[in-house]
Structure formats: structure tokens, C-alpha cells
Image (tube, helix red, strand yellow):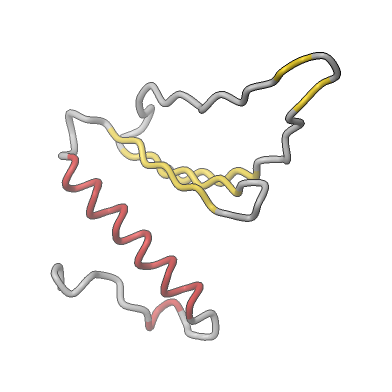
Length: 94
């Protein structure tokens, strides 16, 4: 499952109150693998990967995350290039 969220700019203070934003808590994955992207208020993209720990080793998920980062770097660095022509695996895995 892939999920894309756009996080609205949050109010940081209220009259007479101190406000602290808490990090979201991830308690597990409802699916075998869940990849979530959240666009932050400053335009940055935050990615999270959740997985069923009895199905995948951490090293497998690390490789998946590295592949996603590599793909996003290629797409954003060469927006004029067709996705079908981009490298889909790293040199180590090819």
C-alpha cells in the first residue's frame, strides 16, 4: 500500500498556551508493506516504510528504501527523461 498525505501548516501557539507537536507513533503495519509519503509544510517530502516483521528482514526493507530514494533522486534530477529509461536497480543488485 502506498499512501500520500499533504500536511497542512500547523498552528504552533495559542494565546496563553504552550503547544508542543508530538511525533506520530507507528505501531505496526496493517499490510505486508506500507509506504507513506507526507509533504511537510516546508515542501520537504517525508517517507515512512512499515512492514510485517515476520515476513521481511530489516535488510530487505533497507534495500527497498534505498531503491525508492535512488528512484526519486533520478526522477527529480532528470524530469525530462521517461521513467521507463531510468535505472530500476542499483549496480550492486543488477
